[in-house]
Image (cartoon, rainbow over the protein chains, first blue to last red):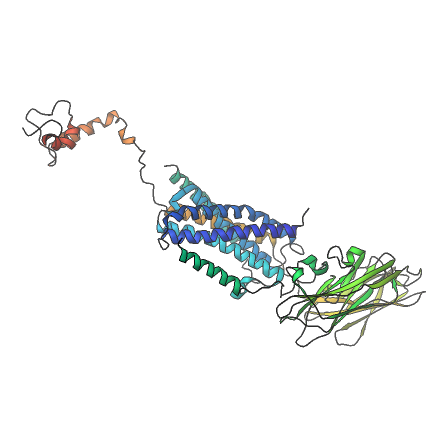
Length: 191
Length: 377
């Protein structure tokens, strides 16, 4: 039986590795679809890689979050870094779910216009960025140093909303999710 | 991929390899914890890359150690050097195999270390030019017998990590405790942490003690006495003054009874700011709100921006028979054909055989041009 700490290391390595490749592929997708990089035959390859690694990382993320909670020293969320890690990983998951659902339901239409391309690629890159920041916060928590220390990120400060605001945001998010899903179904069912 | 590009890529990768620096250590340290020797080979990345430390490590302890009674074991390190960070890590071990070699693995408890924790591995940050230091642990064994103790050191250097270990074990012999020796209870575990601005009430459980004195000191200060009250049979309490800033003090108890007077080791008590706390429900609620809000926003925005689908090439609904009630509309179009200037004029005999008005409307000119067997009439 492996310890939660070891399991957390394994799962976070999977998450960070997968999201890093995904982020790089989304960057290529953005450059290719905006014709900055003129290699048309690369488009399907980076499209596939970006979304496959995104889904892989997304599948590993809950394991990383749960093992992280159980392997943290002390009881509960006793450090602002842990809270920021939670927020960042959930933000990354939100972006990843949005990107994956869009690509799943809308197909190649996500690359149809420059606006949809930019939105899709930026959301994919944001998912990657959030996960890398989460990993950086983990390094700061565990070893008091991280590769992103050069940015002097305020991991010790927590922006915690009042419960009411969070509740409203949650309801709004669920509403947007349902609305977007129905609209995507309407679009995708025409074909 | 042409040859030039391949050469450039190989050169670029070679340049990256050449310019990278090789760092196997963790210059920030790993933090105090219960660790095997060299953290099982993990602290410095690869234990085989360590160079031998020039530090001299010497262990010492009191000559008489009784089972169930805490004792102090002190490591004195001299001839020290370190990396620019000054971080040095010290291990207290019971063998040097690299696994299951902590005092806990040999049946000892680490009750306190000089950093205020209870770990066999502690780190210190040396000041510039400092070449000597000492670390102490308060340990306790419930079993009699002889245990060899080893000390090890980890530190950085100009380019490589360093490791050193005492060449031979320092034997600590644990004897059976005399029956009437005044002592702390074998179940007593000293408090190692406290928060700022709050006096600390020490509660001591003892055996065979008729009176107890508690002394405390801060680093570099005089030894002070705390008032001790009996709060029950073999139960004593003493109050230590509050700390106003993060710091540590040491305290010990002097126990008197029928047997010889006993003085406990110095226990370290570290004062820290009150731990950070957040309401877990609020944190989880906000985390899930972020998840759903962002996912919902991306999906809603993308579904709005995606252009409406073009009619499919497989969409042939316009070829379906028209509903009956639409017939008058078709007729009205036919009626209007003669009014449209781009419709070819009908031949004198009317529509050619087999033609209808709609065909004439679109292909009338071609008929008149002779493409369908007709011609100018």
